Image 1 (cartoon, rainbow, N blue to C red):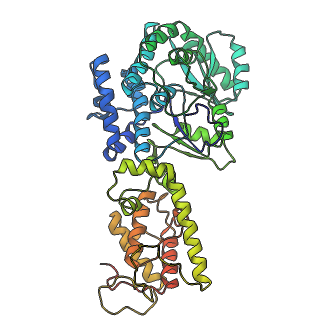
Image 2: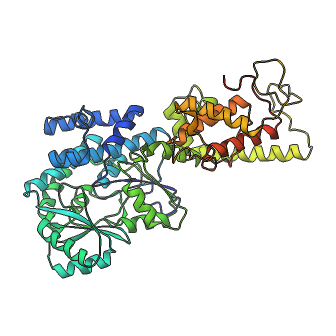
Image 3: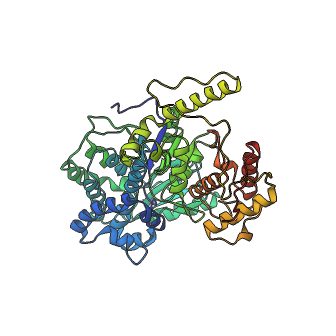
Length: 509
């Protein structure tokens, strides 16, 4: 496998660093995705060995732990939590058939990316993260912090020149209007004060220590010596480093390069631009919160790049659900089990089908679309249908399409009027979602106002299609177009009247 895919990059998975943990989102996802439990079981074995504490009990116990609690009480737990959440998100995406062309991490997330690519075992990844904390603590914890300034890297460097402190450094260049500074706490207070005078906003980063600063240079050799003792394996997927500004190569000694992370800056914006120039159109944030997704949107503003979060809460809903749906629609993840997967390969294990669909799904979809388009054109031109394939069992074609399911033997001849259909759909949606019927007004936004995520909307629309005998939706159908009850009613009515569909005998049964 090429370590430097200069072309052919479509999808990039990004792993967050400091601040990349959302405890509530992780707990919600754990209820539906067994990959989270399995990942954290492996982490538990190491944290119990190192700290006599199971990280899963810290994160999933009776007391809900958020990032601030972890930082205040257990610095090691905050770092392992960020690492574990990133790996768990990656495992969920992989189980759904989502296969990235390249991985990249932001600071701590670069360790997660290397583990996801097979460079180290999951357990050794925990040891690396833990050692990163330990060597800094042995240096006295390095009394410092990190602050994000609303300024470009160039302007930030000029601001730091005014302070003239050798231990101050630009730690990360996130985008053209945000740069993170790392250094001693007292000196950073002066930086924030100067920034305020210049009308430059400043926000403190949630992190136990300052990273990417010259102050950490004494800790790097000890860290490198420790990591050299761990087994390093060949990468099974390309990993791009925003710190090194290049892909990791087969001959790299990862222990030495990871030690350089202590003092070298993260040039995240430049990394995103490089991946975009290589063809990346979809960036998926594998981990907590949605900070990297927002940064990608800032860096690529004006392009058609999609940035998708996973273990984050958006409007009170888990972002992972919408991201998986978006990847399926783009042919970048396997269809949900029970849908196309069940129809095409009911006896094939989910992970096998997911792997196949990840590699070949887009070609299958394109072939089906091409064949259906040719069939439609043939039918419209009045040409005879093609002969069945040799050996295929002949089927009797009905002269007319079957009527929609009905409890009575006689079809009902009248066309549906909009008001009647709207009332029936409102009842169906209200019963399925356990909402009062009166909230479903004509213009109410299903997701933005009622919190009905895209996965549930697809399920409800499938129920409607089955109930009213609607034809399969065309390949260009986009759920986002039909985001209100009124638009759904108009769509269903048009479909029914176009094909002369009849109402089911029991409209609300």
